[in-house]
Image (cartoon, rainbow, N blue to C red; front, side, top):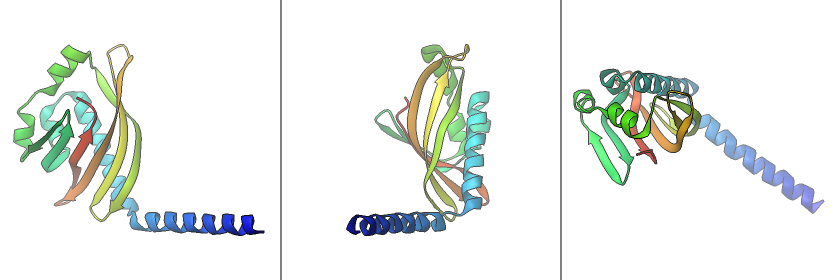
Length: 152
């Protein structure tokens, strides 16, 4: 009897916690944030820096490879060419989302734990990386505001 009561209480506590988490999530905001990540990946795979820069919100922060980088504007972000390096050094052709899980959501901001993989032109997986993306809504635009990645 004591085991059953303890189990019942544990289940209620767990369900109550899930209810709190679910109540905090705005389904429309989560859907918009996920759609912006789809746009992010499509623009990345198109190798178009201007399009990719438009999927972000600014200032944009990236934490990776032991450094913190901040770009203030889309123009500043688009000045560089990451695709030549990815292609020449790693044989990169395209990337895909393997997993995207909302860890926190609120009005106009969603934290998404992601896993993505990079592939070569023959469809062979080059590498897989875990990341955290913070997607925000600024002036009606959903975009990635910050990301922390284990990718180079």
